[in-house]
Image (cartoon, helix red, strand yellow):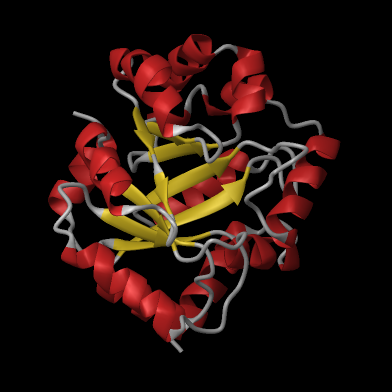
Length: 258
């Protein structure tokens, strides 16, 4: 069984997923970050594939991606880093990246490399749902990989149900239509959006991401979903601590519980 599916069967609330950009701030600390996060109790990890035009990402992740590319990170290099990760890491691992570098690598080749490394799924923000259904889903399924789709406040009800019926793992619920980045709180409009999605009774678990950076946003999101995804805040702390993942995740936990 896919590790993502197993996680959500074993744990239904307060799941914490951390996103970081591979190769940032240090080219070769990808494995150390992953191991440290698992050791510190993180439930799931999203490994960012750096790209030169990350249109859905805010300044923090854009900067991280640019620096990772300057450091020499490539998709091929990342797979080489990950080739032995399953010797001692057991939590779900997801690759998150844009379609362009994945297509340059070759989608089926990408899926095969994911399978060989023990990757459980992928998030491709700019993959249209129609293309997913017609071209990508069947290939990913052959390799037991979950393609996680995103929904936003602008995603209509019919499309949300279609995504729910034709994907596995979880649904990535973007907290707002804006780019990634820190938010102080979630306003009434966003709270209403959270309530609306929760009331739909979806089959897949829902994880909320974008803008979670403090206790208020963390608890608000956790109340309305199976868990939260934190990226920009962790990356900022990782930069502050010069790549020391233990210090970064320790500080993040303190912030979320203040």
